[in-house]
Each structure stands twice: as C-alpha cells, then as structure tokens.
Image 1 (cartoon, rainbow, N blue to C red):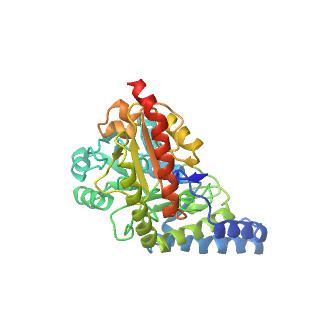
Image 2: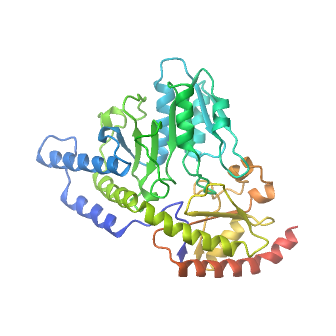
Length: 384
C-alpha cells in the first residue's frame, strides 16, 4: 500500500524508533527527582531541549516548551495569551483556513467574552498581510496564522505579517502554527517577529504525543495545565522522556535535511501535477506559493470519500481535507473560504509527499489515478 497521506502523519524514522526504545530501557527516572536516576533523566531532557532549539534555527533553549502535540501547543499559545493578559485586550485576529485546534480555541474563548476576526483568504488560499492589518483593533491581543495550509498547501507570508503587525502595534503577539512548514519550508524564526510557533513531532517522522511551542523570551502565557511546575510552570506533568528524546532526533534530521528534502519533493510534486493536469475532470488547486509536499485537486460531482476509498482499493492512501476533518462529509471550510462552490468543496483530495517517495511511487500513484478516473467518471456523469 502506497501512503500519500504524510501531511496527516509520517512513519517514524527507524533511528527514532531505536532511540525511543533505548531511552525507555536505560532511563526509568523521573526528571524531577533529585536522586541519580532522576538527575540523569533531567540532563537528557536538557540536552534534548538544546537539540530542539538548534533545529529551530538557534533560538534559546529556555524558549522551548514541550507539549503533547501541536493541538496542545496551539491551545496554549492562543488561550495562554488571552487569559494571561491583564491589559484588557480581548481581540484575536486569525484566518478562515486555520487548523481546527486554532479555530476551536478562538471559538471557545468567545464563550468567555473574547472576540475573534476571521480573515478570509484570497482565491489561491493565501492570506494577505493587508487584510490582517485591516483587521487589527486597539484591543487586539494576538494574531494567529498558519505557516502552510494543511489542506491545499499554500505558504502564508508569516514573516511579513509578523513584522508589519509589530510595526503597527508591538504589544500584539504573533502566533504561527508551523506544523506543515517545519522541515519543508525555510523560516528564520530567531530573527523574525514571530512570538509563538507550534510544532508536532509526528509530522517529521517522530513519535506521536510530542509537540513543541516556541515562546519568545519575555512573552508571558497563562498555563493551561498546573501542578508540578514543569516546563517553566507552563505545562505541568511528568515528561515523556523517551518520546521527547526520539522526537529531538527527528527534529534535528528534519532541520538538517530541509533543502535537499524540499528540492526532491518539489521535483516529485511537479511530476505529479503534470499527470493530474492530463485529466480534464480533475481540477488542481494551485496556490501562488505552494509547499513542496502537498498537491490538492477536486473531482466535481463526486464526494471526497468516494474518490479516497476508490484509490485505497487501488493500493494508494490519500486524504480528504485534513485528517481531523476527514470523517465528515461537510464541504471543506478551507475550499469554501477560498470561494469554491459546494460541488468543489465536497470533492477535494489531498496528496502529500514523504521522505521515502520516489519517481516510481509517483508512477504507481498516477496509474491508480488513471484507473480511478476511469471507474468514477461514469458515476460523476450520473451525479450531474
């Protein structure tokens, strides 16, 4: 079975699996304990934090907060900012194409009296800095925008937006959901105006259950989990040491191989796009600035699930919408926000590339697509 759903999750790297197993076997101590075993675990945790900091471009080790995943990181960034402010600011600016963990965090805060402006994207899925700036208010506390859209792969101008927001009002914090960007799209985080950056290990061949939130020095957040004071008081709970160490290895490999990976994926993506264009029934979704690992198209007249399961029967795994929304038959809110019709927004398919994919894999995928179109085209005609 060929897996072209790497934007949902990536297979753990063999070196990561070995590292997790070795740490589980060798280190049973709690990093908070003061005996030898605990101190050894604490040193290993500190070294891992340093690896994360280096992988993010030389940010400070104390700016790394370890979480259970990007969903928790996004929740901490957004809720922690709004709940931790004492200056009366209660307004959030985000976009209509964010991951559910961002959108739902904002909606939950609205129940507590906060307000959110959801900025619409352009037709190609890019959110303009001008629209973000136009949405700012005197009481804006936070701007939250993803680095790369997880559904159709548009790279957002997050560095430009962060810089312009800070020029307008330095008291506004800028959060970026970097899940689909890290390891694939270059970002100078330390020199940017970004205050908060969320990451997930299982998107870069690390273990599930480990996330990172970069918190720029001086930024104060309200902790969502309290208790033993771990993670500088921002995220209580005994650390999952083995997974954290394994994830650190995955982050290091992702950062070191970024340019080579992006070049390889871009080449494969171009091959795949050329083949998709051969089918007049498949409509490519083409961002102006595409990420190298995502190809998105629609098959108007058919539901995404029908296309997905047909390809699965032909030996290929793909996705409809993001993994968190794939089980619903509702129209994609991302495609709807881009102005696409319901017919298009219910028929989207995302193909996402991984490190192990080859040109031969692309040929097999193309063969499956050809067969799927041949099988589904008569159904599409009857639907109309």
